[in-house]
Length: 459
Image (cartoon, rainbow, N blue to C red; front, side):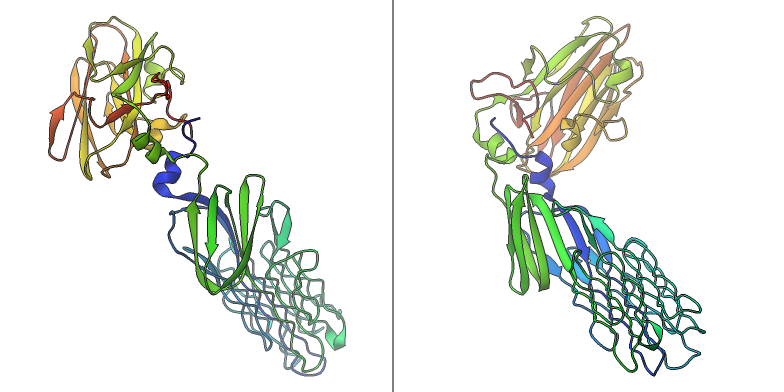
């Protein structure tokens, strides 16, 4: 294979899957005998995929654990993604004050049994409510569930909200459970949320699970609740690339199954992601390997009007295609379609105009959508000249802003029903008058032997 790198990756960045979990909040302090503290909330949970630019410094910050005396967990950041620290638990000072808890992903803990709000359901859930009569505390909210309320008439604090599972490391792991509410009269609190939420004054712990759990509230007189657990940022990306962990960050990288997984466990700094392709990227290959000027095209017999208006006429690879250094024809008959594909390299940055004069409809797509296996519509065409409809010879144009020196996939289609038929394609750009010539700035895909490759270069 000549080429092996996605066009979209070259243009827009490397796809990186992320899991960004903030620090868990600390559990509340038991402020006097028999009165307990609420559990700390889990750190916020954010997951998804983004395209990040090549060799560009990207900020990362791992949120610290909520410390003693009931402090919130710290925020974790990857690029533009911020996961909010878990809220702290609060303690009771009298029978009229309940042990509340912080919500997962909430920037503030609850106060005396008033559950903290769900500030962002994507990040986590609110804490549970304490109890006036039994004095056990409400639990911390988790990434996957609301923290449990205190159980009236019992000595048991609420159970911490459950965490959420992620398989970003290759193994399903549950993260970000909420801490339990403290129990009355030194009794054990409720269970910690799945994801190692702390229990009755204990900190969140990696244990079987891992990641930014809230600390448990305490039911022991004047004793602080458990600390929260440190946040974590985990990034997964193709193993053809190399990530550099910058100064100020602590982390490690492991490779498995065609991907690398970088786990950053502490600090604030920058990462960079560099390309190490086994074969030249598309842009380099198009500039380096032999090629043929023009586009390759093929006619298809039949009434294609119901499909060609979406740009998907025929099946790639094309069979028996012809290289075109200009496209202008007419009177070929009725009920046929035509498709031409290749690459266009604008000489300078600016606005380029593409024209078709056709009977019946025609269209042009430029960019990633031109090379995609599907998804083209009249709405995302650079030029839609009555696609899907019959018409006499009509000339229309479409414009697009392009970067000079970059190869862009291009696709031209023409549909013909009955009656007259023709197609002429032309283009113009900064300092270039309208022309039908494809001899310069256009390249037809071909292999090293000089034969048409019959499709876009493999991605």
